[in-house]
Image (tube, rainbow, N blue to C red; front, top):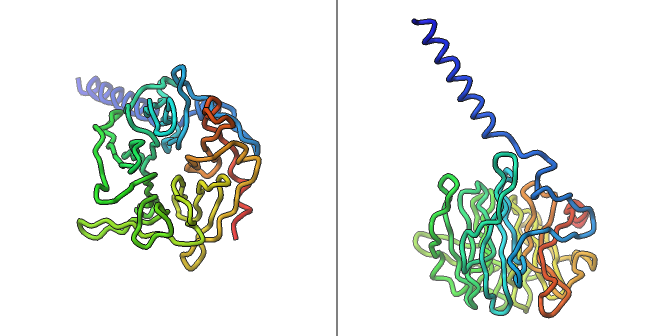
Length: 289
């Protein structure tokens, strides 16, 4: 009786261990990024399924384990219409989706732990929302940063610092790239000033998790700026014509491992060929001061 009980407990323990191992297995390399072959130094379109008459654009968000990919589907600009956040999920050794997560929102960004999703509405004042993940489900959108005149492309780093494009009292232009200064119930947007910000609206950007660099969207395309030892930022350096081949480049995102840059671009005024592209990011590390 006792031996039988021990055997049953042992068998159950093994099964639980195998379930744990199976659930924690990493995604195979050839299945990463929805099974698409990673690009080299030349940008390639990242294939994302959208409904007819719409296109994928804005920033993309990828979970730390690579098993979930979030993106925006847009019908038209400006203002954006038909904007919807969709996602793919890798489970049971296959990709499924895309599924609709939130209609009426766009530009998803994950927290460093992947348990919170930040996104926004396509209104002129850029209202920011968040959702918290519980299991495989996300909570209903809740608005945040209501006291800011504009809250665009909110991001959080490994140090727990928040960065945003917003209207700052010490700003250079209407919208600046800023660090959020949180004091009790008050949240202020503190501009990085020049040379990072210019006399143009400073909107889309990506800041590295370790805060070592920023990719910013400028009138001449994507550019990179590095943080100096004194905490100031270097003058932005354009990423070049091969990256900025479209009429505009926006929505930058760099994967957590720093290997690939994703961004939105297109060559036609009607946005009919607009999409999300990706390119190997290692080549831009030589730009560091």
